[in-house]
Each structure stands twice: as C-alpha cells, then as structure tokens.
Amino acid sequence: MTLAPSDKALVPFVSVDNMMKLVHHIGIEPMLRGLADYIEADFRRWNLFDKTPRIASHSDEGVIELMPTSDGEVYGFKYVNGHPKNTKAGLQTVTAFGLLANVGNGYPVLLSEMTVLTALRTAATSAMVAKHLAPKGADTMAMIGAGAQSEFQSLAMKALVGLKSVRLYDTDPAATAKAARNLTGMGLEVLACRSPEAAMDGAQIITTCTADKQYATILSDNMVGSGVHINAIGGDCPGKTELAAGVLNRSTIFVEYPEQTRIEGEIQQLDADHPVTEMWQVLSGEAPGRTSAEQITLFDSVGFAIEDFSALRYIRDHIGGTDYYMDLDLLADPDDPRDLFGMLQRAAP
Ligand code: NAD
Image: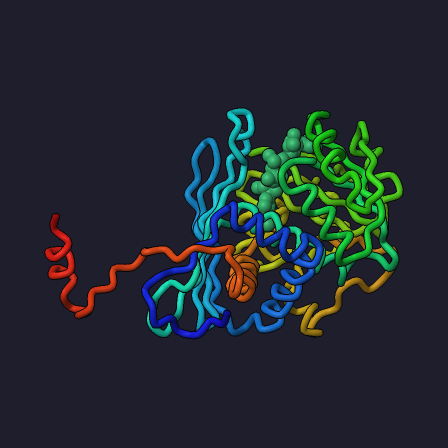
C-alpha cells in the first residue's frame, strides 16, 4: 500500500488486536529490523522534516504529549501519555495512538494504535543507534528497569546488534521475573540480577528504562566503567532523569533533536550549550560516532516525532493485502462537498 492521495473518505484503522496480529504475521525480530530501517532512512533525510519539540501538558501524575512532524508529503502525529504511577492501578505507564495524513489534501490516510508500536519503535531506535555506537563485538546488555519496554529493548538489540546475553534488574523483583519469563526461549541468555551493579557486570551496553517522576540516580558515576554504550530511555521529561551528572560529563552524548532533548533528556542537568551530537549527523556521515574503544557513548533518548512517523509509515506500507486493519468512517464525505448540512438533513430518522 502506498502513501498516494486517498480518493476515498474511509480511513484504515489498526487496532491493538490487529497490530498484534501484524507483528506475529511479520515476526517480532524482522519487524524490529524493518522499523529500524525505516527510522534510519528518515534520519538520513532529517533536513526535509518539519521539526518541533513535542507539545507537553504536565500534571502532578504525569504528562500528555502531542508529537507532530511532516516531510512535506505526509504529515503525522502521535498522542502519548507518561504516568509512572499508573501500573499500581493496573494501567500502563505509556499508551499512544497516532495518525498519518496526506499533506496535499489534509485527509488522514492511517489511524493506528501506538502503545505496542511505540515499544517496538523505541526499541528499534535504541538498537539502530547502538549498532552505530556500541563497542565492537558488544554481546551483553544490562537491562535496568524490567517494565513494559524491556523485552522489546532486549530483542531489538539481539536482532540488530547481535546481543547474546541480557542481565535484568528491577527494584520490583516481580518485574524482573516477568521479563525473564517472557524472554525465555527467545534466543537470548537471560539472567535475573539482584542489584544494578550485578546486572552491569561484563555488560558492554547498559540500558536504563525506569519510570519515576524525579531526578533519579539509576547510574552513579562510580558504577560506569570506560568503553560502554549507555542507552538511556527513561529520562524523558522535565524533572525525570536517570543518570548522575558525573556520568554525563564523562560521556560523548548523542541525541535525537537537541531542542527537545535539552528540555526533557538527561542533558537537562547540564548547561544549555553542553556539546551534543545529533544522531542523524552520524548516520549521514557528517559527524563521528564512537572514535575510541575507551569512550563512553551515551544515547540520551527521549523519543522524537520522526521515529513515530517512520513507524506509522512502516505500518501503512505493510497492511496492504492483509486483514489487519478496518476501514473507519472517520471523515464526513458529502456528495457535494459544500452540502454538509444537506447530508445531515438527509440522515434524519
Ligand atoms: P514501566 O512502568 O512499565 O516500567 C518501569 C520499570 O522501572 C518498573 O518495573 C519499575 O519497577 C522500574 N524501576 C523504577 N525505578 C527503578 C530503579 N531505581 N531501578 C530499577 N528499576 C526501577 O514503564 P515502561 O513503559 O517500561 O517505560 C520505562 C520508561 O521509558 C518510562 O520512564 C517511559 O517514560 C520511558 N519511555 C521512553 C521512550 C523513549 O523514546 N525514550 C519511549 C517509551 C517509554
């Protein structure tokens, strides 16, 4: 299915149920690789995109955000929340849905669930970045925070970087046990650890993916040795970080979109002019990635709109010829475009 202008007013809709069917139809790891390819392709044409930091509405409990972007032909946005206390009430920390539209006529061309898709795209982005920055031969990852994102993060590192072993730690042992159970039989050696230090033992990649609305210290300065790649996922809101400033000061920092990351990422702790490298520059050969074996590379991930745009584009291109979507009567479509009222009148009971 292409992104050509739609001549029908029906909008393809991918529900959670259909998204899960599509993932199993394609296969989780092939889909993670496919998403990473789409994301990398869009990062390589970065300058084409309309970019803005996401629009956030904060409350004491969490945040609701809108993430728009456009490449001039297709427009996309994601609605996403982040509510760390939700899991205590049996709700997800992060839920999302998103839309693609045709820039030419403004008509939506896809509406999709994005809770599952966000976990996939975040993991695909992490692994795509690690593929370029992690030390050569990296095969062991510490996964600190074993919540909803953790299995996706682990499998993406397996699919794209060649991870062989994942060492899990969560302050809640039930979460560690859940992730260990889910990852059993997926082709990774899985170890449940009792401390973050134990999880980091021998790991060349350290992923922090915790949820707490505070300046947390998941990694203190003395915990991080040289030569590792840190994939920092959970610090993604003002007042919500995971790494001690000392770790940041010893690292070469890579970001998605600095204008957003300086507000939301780990680097909110640093001066506004602290040097960072934009990941798209590494991918297009304009800036170096890892330059030495001893260097600590840090991906200060917050999640950027272009990754969601790429993920929606991937879904749009892969639902054609499948039963994994339904057509939604989302847009009013009067025969005479100016006779909206007449259409309503004719529908009177
Ligand atoms: P989740 O609530 O399902 O899991 C978070 C886990 O972290 C929980 O199991 C919790 O017990 C654990 N935790 C909290 N404090 C900890 C600590 N000090 N040490 C170890 N574990 C700790 O959340 P999730 O959906 O997995 O998301 C994790 C984080 O990633 C959130 O902060 C979310 O906002 C963020 N996120 C970022 C992106 C991105 O693109 N960067 C995308 C999605 C989610």
